[in-house]
Amino acid sequence: MVTALPLRLSGATLARRGKRLVGPVDLEIGAGSITAVIGPNGSGKTSLLRMMHGLQRPASGRVEWSLPDTQARTRQAYVFQQPIALRRTVLANLAYPLRLRGLPRAEAHARAEAQAARFDLSDKLAQSAPSLSGGEMQRLALARALVTAPEILFADEPCAALDGRAMREIETRLIGASARTRLIIATHDMGQARRIASDVIFLLHGRVHETGPVETFFASPQTPEARAFLKGDIVE
Amino acid sequence: MNDLLAGLGEALRLILTLDAELIEITLRSLRVTLSALAVACAIGLPLGGALAVWRFRQRRFVIATMNALIALPPVVVGLVVYLLLSRSGPLGVLGLLFTPAAMIVAQVVIITPLVASIAHQALRDLWAVYHDLLISMNATRWQRIATLLIDGRRALLTAALAGFGRAIGEVGAIMIVGGNIDGATRVLTTAIALETGRGDFALAIGLGVVLIGLSLTVSWASHWIMRTERRGTW
Image (cartoon, rainbow over the protein chains, first blue to last red):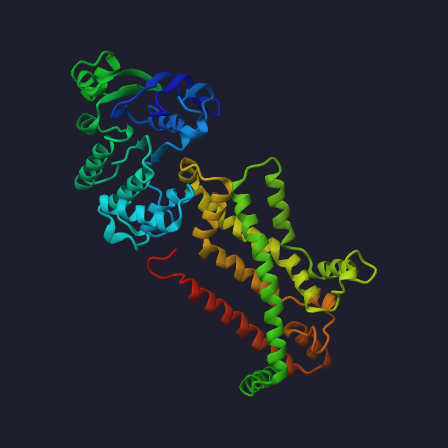
């Protein structure tokens, strides 16, 4: 099967107004299930995800997929920390990515309805998406991102500002999706990283300080910064 | 005060008796204005969307120019369109001068910048919300513009209504290119100007009341059709 993975970052940096936000980062993301990008606030988690997804171009270095960029982009999806709902019904939101890809309206709507059923949104299909609750909106964002069956899904703090029940729902969906889709999730919630991730990337000051399987990272972090972070100390 | 009261009475009489001339002038006003508005929206709304989405070198200059064109003096527009359409002008062969088509052309020139500018303002704000999502979804430039036009349709109603208001109340340009010919190019505003000149203030005020009523009716109807300001709509 042709795959966009592995994703390779070679000396990739991201800068804004001359200030370095991320990097240089050397990283390879291959097949797997769920990778958690963790680190304190301002460590560059969101920026790293945005750079990997192509929402922001690296100032230097390279971000390369194993497929040409145009093909790789169609195999990715992104869930934003603040879910963005199109000013349409839930059904139209779910059908939107399929319509963008040229699917006929009837087929797109049929697939959108099936996706709504998988994400318990069937009773909301005719409702305007911006009027959904926070948890429902994030569920819609995830369902919409997955409706095209992407090979890779980036999710930026997908459970931020959600209550426990909504968080559990989203985590369950993410774990379910990981069977078919490679997930890269930014989170500052260590519990969440333990619960759902198979491996972690620990970021600090925009640089990758440590990577590895989740059990190893939490049991015996290799760097003093990671140890301090896991202890709950303020890491500067 | 007497003229005003007499005018209101005259307006009531004209409307209640369905005065044939009033109906004819009103329908012509609507036909000319709505035709001009349709053309202006066909140009201005996608232009507003394109300026919200596209980043190009002279973008700020184009936006500033478009905004400046909102203040185009109608009389000057009328003069230029007159010269273009006059027999010796470059478009004289079309024979449009002193026809409703010439009035539509003049109105299109006057209201397109207004429609495009308001559309741009509204769609720029929506683009700020949608930007990351549509880029992430790999939407093409045309798909992005189409999405903004569809999802921003209620905000675009304001642009269309502003264009309608400017066009239906316009007098200077259409007087020049239409000629205010009875039974051919006379519309509400030019009729009001004519009756005021004649000193028939009652009829002028009557026509004015009809004009205002027409504007309000179109606005109410548009909001009702678009279901604005209702629960669950945007």
